[in-house]
Length: 397
Image 1 (spheres, rainbow, N blue to C red):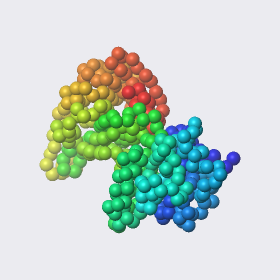
Image 2 (cartoon, rainbow, N blue to C red; image 1 turned 135 degrees about the vertical axis):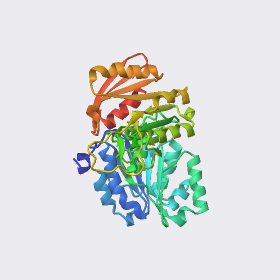
Image 3 (tube, one colour; image 1 turned 60 degrees about the horizontal axis):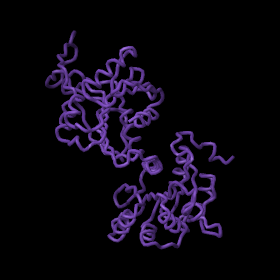
Image 4 (tube, rainbow, N blue to C red; image 1 turned 180 degrees about the vertical axis):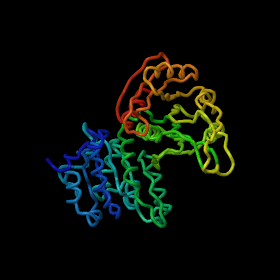
């Protein structure tokens, strides 16, 4: 057994039975492909490395051989490796990932020039329909070159996907590894949400008591973020409205932040909710709003009474704002024996399509237990970590 097999699938099974050709070109970011290859394997992938001559001057082929368990292809032979992996064959690979990709290689691919292993693999993949994902990395002056940008557009028009580089000072840097992995998930998934617009509202609200203190909920926002990520992997166009949770949403998700119920109400007014095919409200919203006092309440009091009034119910406004969307609400209860009844009542009262019920056991934890209830009152039950549960919720939808 090669050492790469010892880590295969230890993080997830998202890429199990997926074969990915990682094509390395002559950018200094090539050094990152060792870590990237290992991460792909940790999610279950079989990784086949190929290298341009320039890239072998930056990292030795033996490094990628060790990282993947497969000897890098640095030249084509009588085995016609480009056809074996990316041709019109029965068991072609699932993805050609060109990472990092130089301006030189982008331009050659755009014009059908085959003078390296990577460009020949790309031409073959284009002709046979193998998905291609390109991760550019170069000096900013090269990336901003009008002809290079034109060549990127040519590639996009024929269906090649790009992960935009991070622009820092005078560099167009390779995207972070987590972002690359997320796009790989997206390109190799079943894409059952492709073209769907999905809004997720999550995280806790925080209401001001005075200019210093707040009242909030014990919610991490993890479920909302996992739903957003998994919907992205499924091909959806995802927007996340995110409260004051401790979890940090990924950069590749479009985010609007809110803090209070009033902030959220303003978003509902400003945004056109009719454009969303699916809306999921899993936020931990305040049920009561304190009467805010100016300045800072003095410390040292023997007793402090905070006057609170009921907050407006966001969920009651969603159907009004978006009559044709599939809307999913969440219902949290302290006891299981009353959860189903109250969750189903919430569904009927607000004309929802589904309600996801859960208990206090999942707060600020990675594990949770949920019940998904539909309009007919049928309930599906699932226990697991929040990553698995996010996928389960989307599968039910």
